[in-house]
Amino acid sequence: MILFFLRHGEAGHHYETDFERELTNDGKHASTNVGKFCAKMNIHFTHALVSPLVRAKQTAQAVLQKLPAVSLVETEHLTPETDPRNLFELLRSYSNDSRILLVTHEPFVSTCLSSLISGTEGVNIVMKPATIASVETTGAPSRGNGRLRWLITPQIIEHLL
Image (cartoon, rainbow, N blue to C red; front, side, top):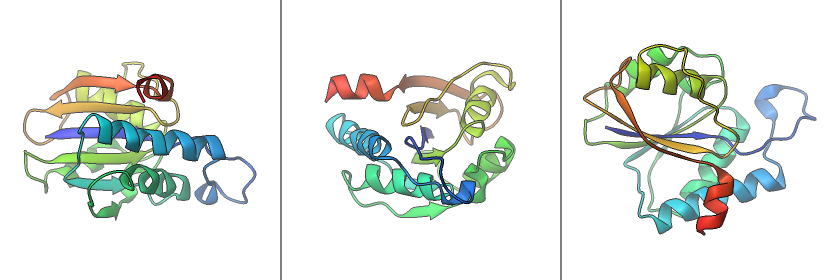
């Protein structure tokens, strides 16, 4: 299974609740660039999962508009404070040849990547907004069975486009 972890684009701070925070213009631009990058590099997804928070959904929509159609499924297992084990359990329902986009938040994304790659949550992986990482797992995702394939920041994506 190949997982593509994408932290949402830059979001504004002047909203009544964290749930409602929307992408800034820079966040929309960087998210659209992720989609352009994926198209240019022929990176396609069989599935796309997204946190229910507004900024994550906006990011997913901006990325996916540049790619072949894939259904977008909301899940609470990608919210900022969730336990990665919940996501691992959900991903067991997908086939091993799946290529899944996961649009999520900090601190979840760093914790999840650390758990997949090292088997612990102690690896310090920093995912700035609109950063995408690819992890390949051996079978269904679980602690320590992932291999980091690559991690690309929005600044690098901008230079590649």
